[in-house]
Image (cartoon, rainbow, N blue to C red; front, side, top):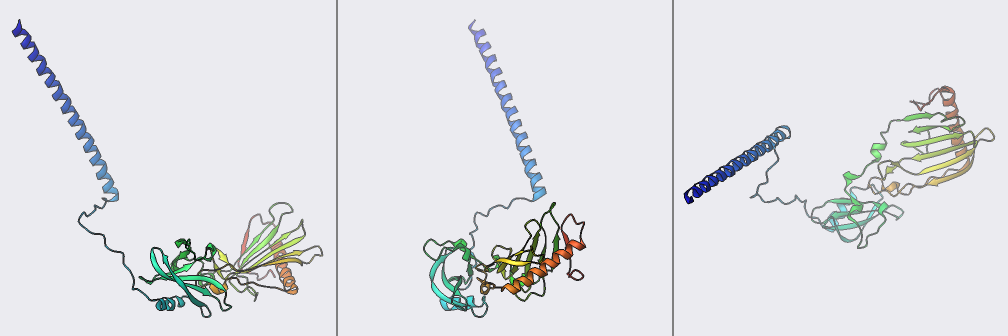
Length: 307
Protein backbone atom coordinates (compact mmCIF):
# COMPACT_ATOMS: atom_id res chain seq x y z
CA UNK A 1 0.00 0.00 0.00
CA UNK A 2 2.79 2.40 0.92
CA UNK A 3 4.59 1.58 -2.34
CA UNK A 4 1.48 2.54 -4.33
CA UNK A 5 1.22 5.88 -2.49
CA UNK A 6 4.87 6.65 -3.18
CA UNK A 7 4.42 5.81 -6.86
CA UNK A 8 1.36 8.10 -7.15
CA UNK A 9 3.27 10.89 -5.41
CA UNK A 10 6.17 10.55 -7.84
CA UNK A 11 3.85 10.63 -10.84
CA UNK A 12 2.12 13.78 -9.53
CA UNK A 13 5.47 15.47 -8.93
CA UNK A 14 6.66 14.73 -12.45
CA UNK A 15 3.42 16.07 -13.88
CA UNK A 16 3.76 19.29 -11.87
CA UNK A 17 7.33 19.79 -13.06
CA UNK A 18 6.27 19.23 -16.67
CA UNK A 19 3.54 21.83 -16.31
CA UNK A 20 5.90 24.42 -14.85
CA UNK A 21 8.43 23.79 -17.62
CA UNK A 22 5.76 24.25 -20.28
CA UNK A 23 4.58 27.53 -18.67
CA UNK A 24 8.10 28.89 -18.51
CA UNK A 25 8.71 27.94 -22.14
CA UNK A 26 5.54 29.75 -23.25
CA UNK A 27 6.53 32.85 -21.20
CA UNK A 28 9.99 32.89 -22.79
CA UNK A 29 8.45 32.58 -26.22
CA UNK A 30 6.07 35.48 -25.48
CA UNK A 31 8.92 37.65 -24.21
CA UNK A 32 10.91 36.75 -27.28
CA UNK A 33 8.00 37.70 -29.55
CA UNK A 34 7.59 41.05 -27.70
CA UNK A 35 11.30 41.76 -27.92
CA UNK A 36 11.33 40.97 -31.63
CA UNK A 37 8.30 43.23 -32.12
CA UNK A 38 10.00 46.11 -30.25
CA UNK A 39 13.20 45.63 -32.22
CA UNK A 40 11.25 45.67 -35.47
CA UNK A 41 9.54 48.94 -34.44
CA UNK A 42 12.84 50.59 -33.47
CA UNK A 43 14.43 49.46 -36.73
CA UNK A 44 11.50 50.87 -38.73
CA UNK A 45 11.85 54.25 -36.98
CA UNK A 46 15.61 54.31 -37.57
CA UNK A 47 15.11 53.44 -41.23
CA UNK A 48 12.73 56.37 -41.59
CA UNK A 49 14.27 59.05 -39.37
CA UNK A 50 17.82 57.83 -38.76
CA UNK A 51 19.23 56.35 -35.60
CA UNK A 52 19.47 58.48 -32.49
CA UNK A 53 22.97 59.72 -31.61
CA UNK A 54 24.57 57.73 -28.84
CA UNK A 55 26.27 59.65 -26.03
CA UNK A 56 30.02 59.31 -25.82
CA UNK A 57 30.57 58.40 -22.19
CA UNK A 58 34.25 59.20 -22.31
CA UNK A 59 34.05 62.53 -24.15
CA UNK A 60 34.19 65.80 -22.22
CA UNK A 61 31.93 68.74 -23.15
CA UNK A 62 33.79 71.41 -25.04
CA UNK A 63 33.77 74.94 -23.58
CA UNK A 64 31.63 77.54 -25.34
CA UNK A 65 33.64 79.65 -27.79
CA UNK A 66 34.36 83.09 -26.46
CA UNK A 67 35.56 86.29 -28.09
CA UNK A 68 38.50 88.35 -27.03
CA UNK A 69 38.27 90.26 -23.75
CA UNK A 70 37.87 94.03 -24.02
CA UNK A 71 38.58 97.02 -21.78
CA UNK A 72 36.05 99.73 -20.97
CA UNK A 73 37.65 102.06 -23.52
CA UNK A 74 37.62 99.38 -26.22
CA UNK A 75 33.99 98.58 -25.47
CA UNK A 76 32.98 102.24 -25.82
CA UNK A 77 34.87 102.59 -29.10
CA UNK A 78 33.31 99.41 -30.50
CA UNK A 79 29.78 100.42 -29.49
CA UNK A 80 30.13 103.91 -30.97
CA UNK A 81 30.58 102.32 -34.39
CA UNK A 82 26.98 101.10 -34.27
CA UNK A 83 25.50 104.59 -33.86
CA UNK A 84 25.09 107.50 -36.28
CA UNK A 85 27.03 110.72 -35.91
CA UNK A 86 25.80 112.99 -33.13
CA UNK A 87 25.03 110.22 -30.64
CA UNK A 88 27.04 110.24 -27.41
CA UNK A 89 27.90 107.35 -25.08
CA UNK A 90 28.63 107.78 -21.38
CA UNK A 91 29.88 104.97 -19.15
CA UNK A 92 27.38 104.27 -16.36
CA UNK A 93 28.91 101.25 -14.61
CA UNK A 94 29.47 97.52 -14.73
CA UNK A 95 26.67 94.99 -14.40
CA UNK A 96 26.19 91.28 -14.87
CA UNK A 97 24.56 90.70 -18.23
CA UNK A 98 23.46 87.23 -19.36
CA UNK A 99 25.68 85.81 -16.63
CA UNK A 100 28.80 87.76 -17.61
CA UNK A 101 30.31 91.06 -16.38
CA UNK A 102 29.54 93.86 -18.83
CA UNK A 103 30.27 97.54 -19.35
CA UNK A 104 27.05 99.58 -19.60
CA UNK A 105 26.74 102.94 -21.37
CA UNK A 106 23.96 105.52 -21.58
CA UNK A 107 23.18 106.73 -25.08
CA UNK A 108 22.09 110.35 -25.63
CA UNK A 109 21.07 112.30 -28.72
CA UNK A 110 22.58 115.65 -29.77
CA UNK A 111 20.17 117.43 -27.39
CA UNK A 112 21.54 115.44 -24.47
CA UNK A 113 18.39 113.36 -24.00
CA UNK A 114 18.66 109.71 -22.97
CA UNK A 115 17.49 107.64 -25.94
CA UNK A 116 18.86 104.18 -25.19
CA UNK A 117 21.50 102.12 -23.40
CA UNK A 118 24.17 99.79 -24.74
CA UNK A 119 26.44 97.21 -23.15
CA UNK A 120 29.37 95.00 -24.01
CA UNK A 121 30.49 91.89 -22.15
CA UNK A 122 34.04 92.32 -20.85
CA UNK A 123 35.17 88.74 -21.46
CA UNK A 124 33.76 88.21 -24.97
CA UNK A 125 33.13 91.62 -26.53
CA UNK A 126 29.46 90.84 -27.29
CA UNK A 127 27.37 93.96 -28.01
CA UNK A 128 23.90 94.36 -26.47
CA UNK A 129 21.29 97.07 -26.92
CA UNK A 130 18.62 98.03 -24.40
CA UNK A 131 14.90 98.00 -25.15
CA UNK A 132 13.69 101.33 -23.78
CA UNK A 133 10.09 100.09 -23.71
CA UNK A 134 10.97 98.06 -20.60
CA UNK A 135 11.58 101.32 -18.71
CA UNK A 136 13.00 99.52 -15.68
CA UNK A 137 16.21 101.47 -15.14
CA UNK A 138 19.55 100.04 -14.18
CA UNK A 139 18.87 99.07 -10.56
CA UNK A 140 19.56 95.64 -9.07
CA UNK A 141 16.28 94.29 -10.45
CA UNK A 142 17.00 94.94 -14.11
CA UNK A 143 16.34 92.05 -16.46
CA UNK A 144 18.62 90.50 -19.07
CA UNK A 145 15.57 90.29 -21.32
CA UNK A 146 15.73 94.06 -21.79
CA UNK A 147 18.94 93.69 -23.82
CA UNK A 148 19.02 92.33 -27.36
CA UNK A 149 21.76 91.54 -29.81
CA UNK A 150 21.70 93.61 -32.98
CA UNK A 151 20.48 90.77 -35.21
CA UNK A 152 17.36 90.41 -33.03
CA UNK A 153 16.02 93.84 -33.99
CA UNK A 154 13.58 94.20 -36.88
CA UNK A 155 12.24 97.02 -39.03
CA UNK A 156 15.53 98.54 -40.14
CA UNK A 157 15.22 101.97 -41.79
CA UNK A 158 17.15 100.53 -44.75
CA UNK A 159 14.42 97.91 -45.14
CA UNK A 160 11.63 100.46 -44.78
CA UNK A 161 13.14 102.63 -47.51
CA UNK A 162 12.68 99.81 -50.01
CA UNK A 163 8.93 99.47 -49.43
CA UNK A 164 7.07 99.43 -52.73
CA UNK A 165 4.44 102.15 -53.08
CA UNK A 166 1.06 100.58 -52.39
CA UNK A 167 -2.26 102.39 -52.75
CA UNK A 168 -5.63 100.96 -51.83
CA UNK A 169 -9.20 102.22 -52.04
CA UNK A 170 -11.54 100.99 -49.32
CA UNK A 171 -15.17 101.27 -50.54
CA UNK A 172 -18.17 101.79 -48.20
CA UNK A 173 -18.82 98.87 -45.86
CA UNK A 174 -22.59 99.04 -46.06
CA UNK A 175 -25.12 101.80 -46.70
CA UNK A 176 -23.80 105.12 -45.44
CA UNK A 177 -20.55 103.50 -44.36
CA UNK A 178 -17.13 105.06 -44.39
CA UNK A 179 -14.95 104.89 -47.45
CA UNK A 180 -11.30 105.83 -47.71
CA UNK A 181 -7.77 105.22 -48.92
CA UNK A 182 -4.63 103.63 -47.52
CA UNK A 183 -1.48 105.03 -49.13
CA UNK A 184 2.02 103.68 -48.59
CA UNK A 185 4.97 105.79 -49.80
CA UNK A 186 2.88 108.65 -51.16
CA UNK A 187 5.28 111.08 -52.89
CA UNK A 188 5.28 114.87 -52.78
CA UNK A 189 4.93 115.38 -49.03
CA UNK A 190 8.11 117.01 -47.65
CA UNK A 191 6.94 116.66 -44.03
CA UNK A 192 6.38 112.94 -44.58
CA UNK A 193 9.13 111.73 -46.92
CA UNK A 194 9.05 108.09 -47.99
CA UNK A 195 8.73 105.71 -46.36
CA UNK A 196 5.37 106.94 -45.11
CA UNK A 197 1.93 105.57 -44.43
CA UNK A 198 -1.23 107.65 -44.82
CA UNK A 199 -4.89 106.82 -44.29
CA UNK A 200 -7.93 109.01 -44.94
CA UNK A 201 -11.57 108.03 -44.32
CA UNK A 202 -14.72 109.89 -45.30
CA UNK A 203 -17.63 109.50 -42.88
CA UNK A 204 -20.73 110.75 -44.75
CA UNK A 205 -23.02 110.39 -41.75
CA UNK A 206 -20.83 112.52 -39.50
CA UNK A 207 -19.72 114.71 -42.42
CA UNK A 208 -16.11 114.26 -41.36
CA UNK A 209 -12.79 113.37 -42.87
CA UNK A 210 -10.41 111.48 -40.56
CA UNK A 211 -6.74 111.47 -41.56
CA UNK A 212 -3.57 109.92 -40.13
CA UNK A 213 -0.18 110.77 -41.66
CA UNK A 214 2.84 108.79 -40.45
CA UNK A 215 6.52 109.20 -41.21
CA UNK A 216 8.22 105.81 -40.86
CA UNK A 217 11.56 106.13 -39.08
CA UNK A 218 12.00 102.71 -37.47
CA UNK A 219 10.30 99.96 -35.57
CA UNK A 220 9.83 98.80 -31.99
CA UNK A 221 7.77 95.65 -32.51
CA UNK A 222 8.52 94.87 -36.15
CA UNK A 223 5.66 97.01 -37.48
CA UNK A 224 6.53 100.42 -39.00
CA UNK A 225 6.72 103.22 -36.44
CA UNK A 226 7.37 106.93 -36.49
CA UNK A 227 5.92 110.35 -35.72
CA UNK A 228 2.30 110.84 -36.80
CA UNK A 229 -0.27 113.61 -37.16
CA UNK A 230 -4.00 112.90 -36.88
CA UNK A 231 -6.45 115.38 -38.38
CA UNK A 232 -10.25 115.58 -38.17
CA UNK A 233 -11.79 117.86 -40.79
CA UNK A 234 -15.41 118.95 -41.12
CA UNK A 235 -17.13 118.50 -44.50
CA UNK A 236 -20.24 120.52 -43.66
CA UNK A 237 -19.27 123.24 -46.12
CA UNK A 238 -18.48 120.70 -48.84
CA UNK A 239 -14.74 121.18 -48.44
CA UNK A 240 -12.62 119.77 -45.60
CA UNK A 241 -11.95 122.27 -42.83
CA UNK A 242 -9.65 121.01 -40.03
CA UNK A 243 -11.35 121.23 -36.64
CA UNK A 244 -8.92 119.23 -34.49
CA UNK A 245 -5.54 117.57 -34.71
CA UNK A 246 -3.04 115.63 -32.60
CA UNK A 247 0.68 115.00 -33.03
CA UNK A 248 2.12 111.72 -31.74
CA UNK A 249 5.90 111.47 -31.26
CA UNK A 250 7.98 108.60 -32.54
CA UNK A 251 8.58 105.87 -29.93
CA UNK A 252 11.87 105.34 -28.12
CA UNK A 253 13.91 103.22 -30.51
CA UNK A 254 16.56 100.92 -29.09
CA UNK A 255 18.03 99.82 -32.38
CA UNK A 256 21.24 101.89 -32.63
CA UNK A 257 20.51 102.74 -36.26
CA UNK A 258 17.18 104.31 -35.32
CA UNK A 259 17.83 106.15 -32.04
CA UNK A 260 18.10 109.61 -33.61
CA UNK A 261 14.46 109.27 -34.64
CA UNK A 262 13.34 108.61 -31.06
CA UNK A 263 10.77 111.10 -29.82
CA UNK A 264 10.57 113.06 -33.08
CA UNK A 265 7.44 115.24 -33.14
CA UNK A 266 5.94 116.77 -36.28
CA UNK A 267 3.95 120.00 -36.27
CA UNK A 268 1.74 121.32 -39.08
CA UNK A 269 0.10 124.73 -39.22
CA UNK A 270 -3.60 125.18 -39.99
CA UNK A 271 -3.00 126.13 -43.63
CA UNK A 272 -0.88 123.05 -44.31
CA UNK A 273 -3.40 120.73 -42.63
CA UNK A 274 -6.17 122.22 -44.78
CA UNK A 275 -4.08 121.64 -47.93
CA UNK A 276 -3.43 118.01 -47.00
CA UNK A 277 -7.09 117.40 -46.12
CA UNK A 278 -8.28 118.79 -49.48
CA UNK A 279 -5.69 116.73 -51.38
CA UNK A 280 -6.64 113.45 -49.67
CA UNK A 281 -10.37 114.18 -50.02
CA UNK A 282 -9.86 114.63 -53.78
CA UNK A 283 -8.14 111.22 -53.92
CA UNK A 284 -11.09 109.57 -52.14
CA UNK A 285 -13.65 111.21 -54.48
CA UNK A 286 -11.59 110.22 -57.52
CA UNK A 287 -11.50 106.60 -56.32
CA UNK A 288 -15.26 106.64 -55.75
CA UNK A 289 -15.77 107.82 -59.32
CA UNK A 290 -13.22 105.37 -60.75
CA UNK A 291 -14.51 102.32 -58.84
CA UNK A 292 -18.25 102.98 -58.28
CA UNK A 293 -19.19 99.29 -58.12
CA UNK A 294 -16.35 98.13 -55.88
CA UNK A 295 -17.44 95.71 -53.18
CA UNK A 296 -13.98 95.00 -51.82
CA UNK A 297 -10.67 96.78 -51.45
CA UNK A 298 -9.18 97.96 -54.74
CA UNK A 299 -5.43 98.24 -55.20
CA UNK A 300 -3.96 100.74 -57.65
CA UNK A 301 -0.34 101.49 -58.54
CA UNK A 302 -0.31 105.28 -58.93
CA UNK A 303 -2.38 108.44 -58.69
CA UNK A 304 -1.86 109.21 -62.36
CA UNK A 305 -5.22 109.82 -63.97
CA UNK A 306 -6.99 110.18 -60.64
CA UNK A 307 -5.81 113.56 -59.35
